[in-house]
Image (cartoon, rainbow, N blue to C red; front, top):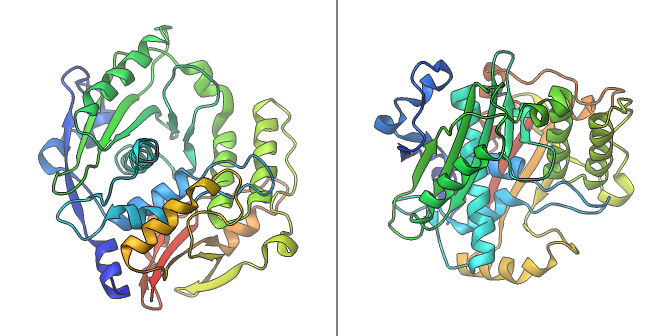
Length: 371
């Protein structure tokens, strides 16, 4: 695949079938769901560039230590997904455990795009709920809406029924019916192999309450946790680790948060600047998706070698970073308190040299390049 062919594949628009499960119909009269109601007729439309950016940012694992890098998921999925076939699908057989994690991450990416696009959830306010137990995965909040989302993913279409039923059952685990959410949505994403078309299956379960868990963190907590993943996305695990500690302190009412992004030059090297539409973005180019020397992901190095070899090249790389003003917002006494970028600002960023660009409202950027 040439760079030009990769760019065409990344910007190719996919429209996949979306169905509403009969056991969890969207309730009539609930206008929060109005934007979804036509999707069974029109389908859900997205580009692989959008999906890879969502997966890369939202699935970045929180660090266990100051040196615990995350997988470069956007680069990984550019290999495991067949970007050239008639349908978006997985290219090979990766073994059940690895395939399960791959499918789950695709589910998170699909759900994230739906939550932002059709529920107007700010990108920093879609995050995992704190706490253990049987519960929905994600919380999304706006000034007027409180929503929860359950994300599922599978490479076997027959599993979607069980996934929806599991999501419905999670509602029964929280039966305090005095409280309600504006939307409680289960999203099951099927992306298979070969010529099987993908499918999204959604459901709105019977209402119950997660209010105490939902309200535990607040908007500020979810903003901080989101930027923990952003710092991992950019390749700054020490900063991500420290910000995560401060987010947990905030969650436990120890609200003092000080300078967060630390000087990582000695360990990590300088961040690379790129200039897009006159603005500076800081980040790193990655040409491997397994972090070098990683204790958590070292066992995947064999899979990485096989994937790049099977793809016929090992010269694909991805730039992941954030706009300089967003980076500098992490240096403030109240880190990452800046407003998100509006749609007009995001749409300004279209091209870097010969590559297309993806910029999200949180200020993150993703650029692919292949030689």
